[in-house]
Image 1 (cartoon, one colour):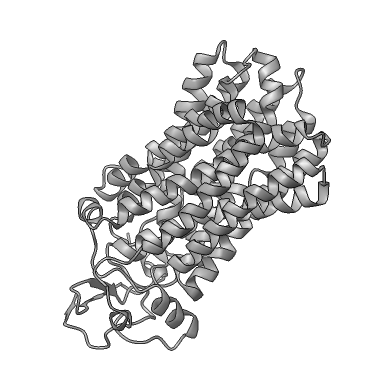
Image 2 (cartoon, helix red, strand yellow):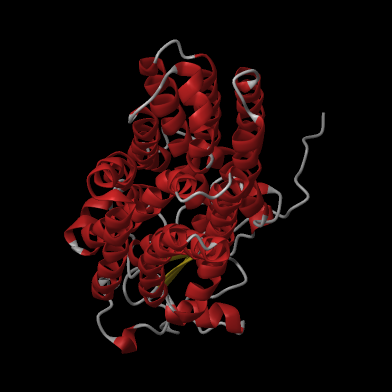
Amino acid sequence: MASSTSSQPPSSYTEVTDRNGRTYRIGETDRQIMGRPRWTMVILPWVAMMAISSSEYAFTSAEDTLADAHNWHGAHIFWLLGVWILFQAAVAFPAGKMRENGTLSARAAMVLGAGGTLLGYLSLAHAPNVFWAYLGFGFFGGGGAGFVYATCINMVGKWYPERKGGKTGFVNGGFAYGSVPFIFLFKNYMDLDNYGNVLVVVGIGLALAVAVSGFFFKDPPKNWWPAHIDPLAVSDDPRVRRALEKNPPAVKQYTPMEAVKTGVLPLMWFCLLCTAGVNIFGISFQVDFGDEMGFAGGIVALAMSLKAIVNGTGRGVIGWISDRYGRRQTLTFVCVVLGLAQFAVYFSGSMGSMPLFLLASMISGFGGGAIFPLFAAMTADYFGENNNASNYGLVYSSKLVSGLVGAGVGKIVVDAWGYGGAFILAGCIGLFTGGLSLLLRQPGRPRAKDIRPNPQPISREMV
């Protein structure tokens, strides 16, 4: 029997080392590695990210029905979301370590994510008491979403190491606007008579979307670089050239411990803690604030939907902008916008101005969403792609705290100071983080003249 052969020629690669000692593996095309173009590893993660987004961004639209159906009143609803976010973030680092040391494949991670997604929705539909909701939705649902999130975001950076901002932002955006249909579904259609069936059907559909897309996931080899781009020379493509000049590759592949010792990763962790807390606060309380200000339920749902749409699309746009103008510069701008938007949401709602409330909600969504792809791409820029799942997992673990602060502690602040005090505090935190972001610098590249690529390789090895 004749053996089957691939339509692609056998792959061979060259390893080149730059003046900093970083190795690049070049010569292999995406089709040689996985039999299809690398853009599929943007679309498939994007689909999976949309599938898990409703648990965070549409949850508060279902809170009234869930509270009445299960008698989960008071702070339980807010803490449920906080626990979901906690475990979603907690999984990021261990999942990254397992992915990088080979004990967990991308497909296996996505299967775990699909199972957690299904269990989360089943628990919301049929949990006999709030403990089982915390376990099913918070632990399994949040943890499953964490496997999906960590796998999808880092997959894109591996396949697009030369221009990762826009692609990472596009995939990350699915985590927000993928929830839009469910915001309307949970707010305007789901009720005490049908909530069980609605949640079960949604859970099955979303779990299937995660599992099917994850079946086709594949990682590139370590140190892989696109075959058509010489990492040691100035590219002829102006888009690639500008992206590499504004966001030069990391000087080496940092391990998590090495990244922590630079002092830059802990600063990134704290900046994400602050901005993610402000974002989660808005997600958790904008519906209730809009209701209290007298806006109709449809208007509040529209405001949350616009927030989610802009939150998601803004991630792709801001990623593209950061490719052109620099990741850190863009992050500072986004933090300032996020902070100012909190003031705008409160004052427009207090004035009873529906158009301004919708506009402020969209701006807040833009700022809150844009921070995540910026930190994801910046982590790879600063510390390399090989250990990015672990390194970004450490940065993203700040959401362990920000989820509880934004949702749970946010409830305490609202009860103590009212919506005015809470939104003003959130706005000040955003502005403070904008100033703090000015201190972020790429480790090992302190001088401007070191940013340009070195056209002369130190060594080459044919394989």
